[in-house]
Length: 403
Image 1 (spheres, rainbow, N blue to C red):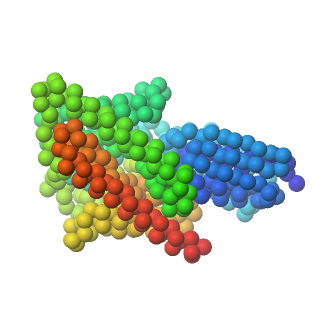
Image 2 (spheres, helix red, strand yellow):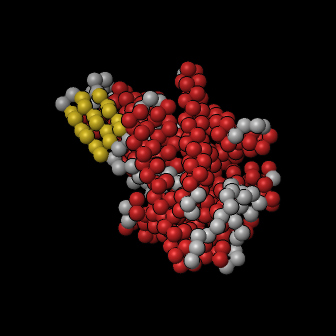
Image 3 (cartoon, rainbow, N blue to C red):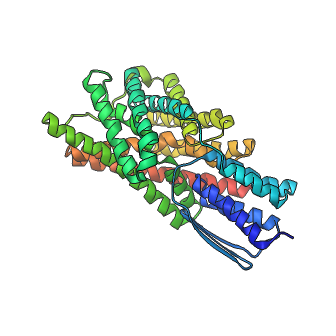
């Protein structure tokens, strides 16, 4: 019989790694219970929040604060697999602790891979949101400047809040500079493509999943964190526009979302969605063997969105609902076929549907004093969010009943 404290400490460490790197609350609790039950600890109690774990058991109690950070989804995959291997192969606790040490100390993706993914992601998302080829190239340049700032200045020296504000500033300044030099025609799409790497996709998606799983407190905290990051990015963009208006003597006039004819066609849109989603699989730390599958999930979801928005009377909200249904279903399907958490595919696949463009346009309309347009954009962003929530709830319930 293994020592009770040692077993519960192992389970808590596993939960810590999962929660810190982008797992949803239900998965953290399920994994911790699986490990503790296998080693004979059935009287434990785990209480998991979005930023903390409370563990109690036989003469054991521990409280851990876990700050909400980014994501390394490969660690989520490996810890999830370790917990299953413990049950299937009856792994001794010594070996389990050693494997957990290796997972915990695993490095992040190489810098060159992150920068390449940033370039491809900015170009891909600029295209799917309507930018032309030159706009995409401008987003690549500005996106690399922004992500280099995040890697070398923001992450090491600044808080998450200040890093996102400054990131929004840097990306928007570079886009305005390139646009003023005649490089790129649609400034709005250039900026949206540039700031995409800052969008808190993990916190946003997991907040929605936690709410769908009835973990309302944890889901609300994560959504508030995501909303705070959206606000910080928007603040950085707004400060740049306001400063530029003081210098230039007037606000830059943008005419709303414009779609370039060169990137409007389905083949370009689908390739862009595949490249963009696969790129963010890199930035979210997805294991390399799942890059292509993640890209296909995002691409098929975007295909559904385009078909509905272009060829039916439904609005953007309706298109988002059915596209999110498709993404959530495919994520669960791929998770079962490839034996890994659905989070890997859902966070990446849902990314094109997250209302990041709506946040940008709401911010711009506010600083340019177009309040009716700002309210309209904001309401659409809320509607898109609710559409994603309901789609996740529906598909999650279907798959839970199949278990």
